[in-house]
Length: 253
Image (cartoon, rainbow, N blue to C red; front, side, top):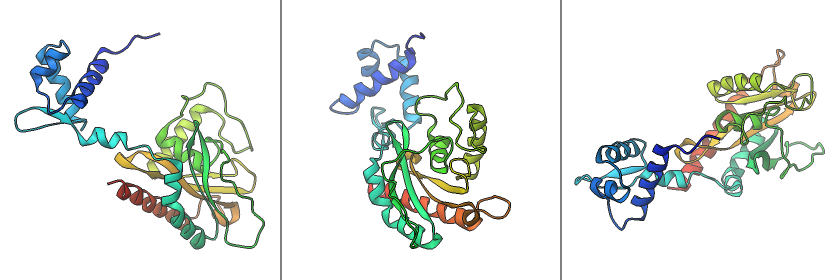
């Protein structure tokens, strides 16, 4: 098993030293406290400043930067995500005429944290709390595309649900490149025959993807005759995701 990386250990020690100090910390203090050469300490301090984890004042002393504070606030609780997205989800369901679901990673898998029924009189079952296969649903792909595989990319094929399911991990990785490029994900009969879904990522602080919101319904309603998601529905989903993201970020300032 590979050993620890010295530069990372040193950077972590510097961040801990600065965070625990009663005031800004200078180069000499960092070097002497951590038994580092001044050139080494200076390089690490400058790098941490460049990525926003440290700030320095006019005297050249360092303190905790906004980037590190934002990183500590980047995680969004699923209940918090749901509370900020509820009104937007209701509006999306009303405008699209389709069911809306919001998902987030819970225990390493995409899970429905909010579900708005399709606004008609058909019988529907509440899906809050249910998990969804990341490789075969638009919500799951939106989370995977920007958040990666929580437990690492598997070596074996994924479960097949229909003849359209992407089961090869390398094929899915290539597919996710396209998802990131276009900014949204879809599945067309990959999870259930005759059903499709469209989803876009929801972002919190520092642009981190904290969830996904999307539509689900029959293929003939969500897709055109060529099996492609209808552009106006894609636009509605992406606009809603942006609105939820904006509210999340604004609420935490």
